[in-house]
Length: 451
Image: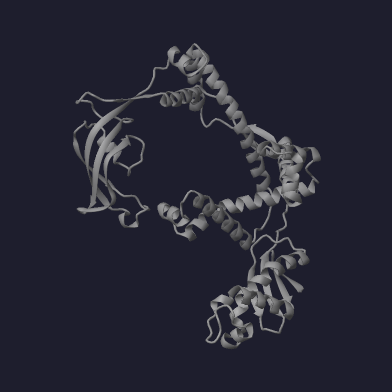
């Protein structure tokens, strides 16, 4: 096998790979053995037709496609290795010549890792994430906990008026221009008013009604909508209201505090809730500070991302989506239909995030090399120990299973994190400014209320 490398514009390269005639012949024989049961020729039993007879009847090109795939499986990785290029995209393969008894020649056009022009990366200024917890946030958390401990009771009063937050049991029958549509009918359906689980405007039209009422609900389907035929259409739902359930929140007092916590008083419980929120905020803030610093560093750098590299990243992301959804029994096409997007629109929507991820990775890697930052043996051992603990195995066994390629990935991941840690440690973090004096006054009032 021989490889010629041609450098193209915008960090692209073309590999011209020549494979010997003997290798092509071998690959065609593999293709024949794989497909011989498909050929039916009078006078021969199925699967017993000689290769020469198949070629005589159909021509040698009947084996070319499988032969090419066989050759590409081993020759392309070898060609990349021989070229010493840092390939960052899937190859675009083009057959140059293929003829039995002659060398097989193809080209592989690929994107190569683009150079990075680093700007300032030490001592960059970035916004510091807030870790203070306001009285408003404490009260919101308490309300959430009250919701979790709410009692759901069936309303007995026939004059009770439906309000936001109630759970109603309804029958509904929908139509567009007097014609029923699929999925538009339901019986004994439990609907929480304010959950926004139905089309916009549906739930609000039930507020103020009573058990036993018949209500005409008029809504308009949004655009886009999963069912294309209903997009933007006006619909009428005939609704019958059956029983109503009311959500009763517990009083925010000492009794509540003692029921849901180890504390005897609401004051003590609120202090504990605030401490928990602060701990969560501090953990989140550390991550946000890291993201803010990295964003500032990346903004100072210059790098031109090849289109093929971006395309490969997007395709890999979509493959991950498909794999994850398949495990849940969902097809990507169904998901996109629900979003009202085509596959091309979905790909386009992923490009900004993919571009940011690629640029960030390239910049951090460039800084890592410039600063000669590596992972220590102790850090690698600690990561292996974590894996051993997770899988309940000996660390030596983990090393044996994952092998050197995975160890190399672990080493790279830790080195990248060490680089980010260095950037954060050298950065100048500044407090976010209040948007107005009104915000300051509101915070002060909340603090007084808490006290």
